Amino acid sequence: MTVWLVFANVAAIRDWTREHPRTPGQWFDARTVDPPVEWIAGGGPPVGPGVTDAVRARSERRIPVPSGVEIVISCDRIRFGAMSHLGRRARPSLVIQVTGRYLVAGHVTFEQEGRGTRVVSIVVNGAEVLGRREARPGGDDPAHLTVVGLRDLSQGDTVELRAYQDSGRVLEILGGTSYGAELGLARLGSARPAAETGAEPRPSAAAAQVAHTGTSPLPDREWVALAGAGPRAPQSGLYVIVARVGFAPDPEGSRHAILEVKGESVIAWQSTRASPSGPTRLVIGAVAWLRAGDIVELRVLQDSGGPLPISPDGPAELLVVSPDRVGEQAWETLQALVGVG
Image 1: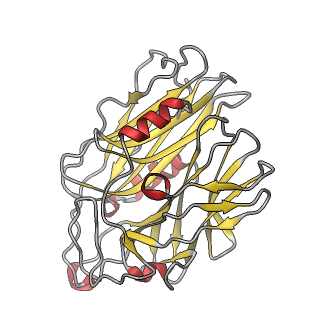
Image 2: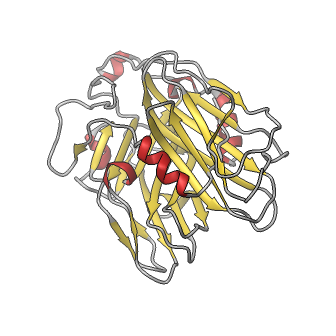
Image 3: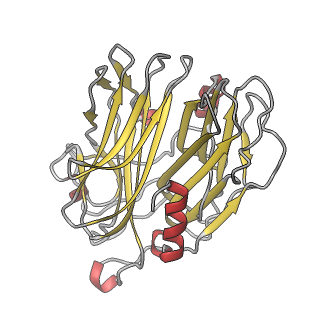
């Protein structure tokens, strides 16, 4: 299922993330812990060691980024997936265990600074840029950047999350449980039989796709849930979530978007200053474990100084789908949302 999503950047982001922290759950320290089974935290059960086609890893350290220098972010904690995805402990890249089509999502949050640009990118095998997100932040809030990519990957391929900024001084990527940099991926397509994986198959749920059809302008400095109440997970399992949203042209202020498990936690967010010309478009995505009944919402905020419509080029859309259910049609939908193909 596909979701379009818009972010707005003001002090309301601080209030929102304070009230809705990042998804809680147990993160294993990949430098010191080697659990006997892979673990899906945040309410998910452990799964057998054969399930190696999805992972969500992060760094909880504050990471300095010199101005004008691109760095590779090392992940030292893992929420779900095989420890072998990290290769050597705290390795700066994830290692693909199963050949297939993948959705990859990465996120970083830079400390507040109004000058320069911020860039986050996903790089395959040290050279090929799979996805890239550039933003011009406002000066009052941290800069949240999410990048999403789709690609066929082979066993042994490496996937890196990189960050860059040119503010003129060293900036830190924020850490801790609320802002740590994250990199996640999931293989898309038919699930392998349990006999091949040595584990019980993961729950598989059909895709859900919703679109925002409202015509009322978005109020200034107020979070708004788009696309209705959002799709509900039919059963517990692993999901890929992608959203896209466009704001009508207005050069003032900033735009923000959040993917949230309703009433509980922020999954991902995106923020940028408004485009000086034309609509401002945001794409956001994540790989996440959802419990049966969880509702995923796309919330947006803008601070242009007055009401602002959604871009007339197309509705905001949100897609939530089990990776096992991504066939050709869903793959094409994901490509259209992410902007590839």
